[in-house]
Image (cartoon, rainbow, N blue to C red; front, side, top):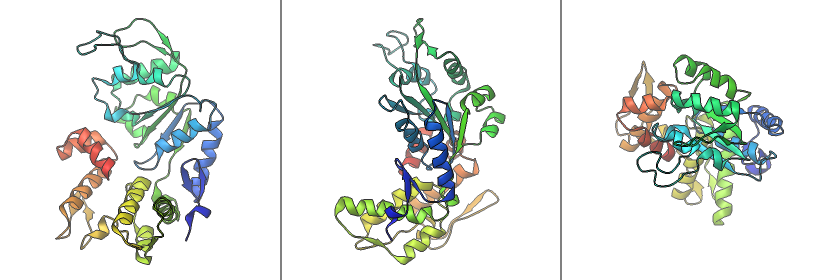
Amino acid sequence: MHSDSQLRHQGALYGSSEAMDLLQAQIKRVTRTDATVLLEGESGTGKELIASAIHQGSTRSAANFVAVNCGAIPSTLIEASLFGHEKGSFTGAARQHIGFFEHASGGTLFLDEITEMPIEMQVKLLRVLECRCFHRVGGQQDIAVDIRLIAATNRSLPEAVREGRLRQDLMYRLAVFPIHVPPLRERDTDAELLAQHFLDALNREAGTNKQFTRRSLERIRAYRWPGNVRELKNLVHRAYLLSADAVTLETPIMTSKGKTSFTHGALNFPVGMALAEAQREIILYTLKYFRGNKRQTAEILGISLKTLYNRLRDY
């Protein structure tokens, strides 16, 4: 099977399912405008790739595309990171700093994990979107900015508003053109086609001709892919490196002697499951249990938010 001839694509986005056809039609439609876009979808579905595709297809493509993960920036630094700061504006500010807004001027600013942005910062973001100007931390002069804003979240927006994690007025301002990004489990046969596409790319790069075993293809079709396309791509790469000619891909649950089960808020692990795999399952199931709320997940697990982001990036 050669997926490259079956997978339709737009930029770096690949898929042949009806869900992806709808997504790509929405991308084409909004690309021709300068509207603010809000991407809603689970982690690993490719929201940054979609934002980049919108930028590359727009009249702003010659300018910068700046991607910012709001959840990865400490709350004490996010204002200076976005808007910059003047020399001497706070302890350690030894020189003037240009923020992400200025770097993206003329182009596109992508704010991922927008619901992780502190509420007080959301007020300032709303002002910038309304007046298209801001001032650096410690500065008084208004700086005009010309950007196209794309925001993204892995949470339900109405739920985020109810929980006080997102201002309702900001939600309305961001959702000029909302796009739902489908999870991989809702994309029919895309998982199998994408797995073959990733394997084909690895074969071309290394001059090899490795093929999936029949059992691997069955596992790809049966697995739910909680980490979506990112998880699939990483597992294919790992299987490619560990295999000879026949690529044996094993999903995390299938590598154990039994299956991890989730019942009434509790996880049950099979005896003999590798410690690293058990840790991975705990993190992913906890994140799913709290509906993608990374701060709550990190707090419950007793790890820092930065550690959680690093683990999720590895997975």
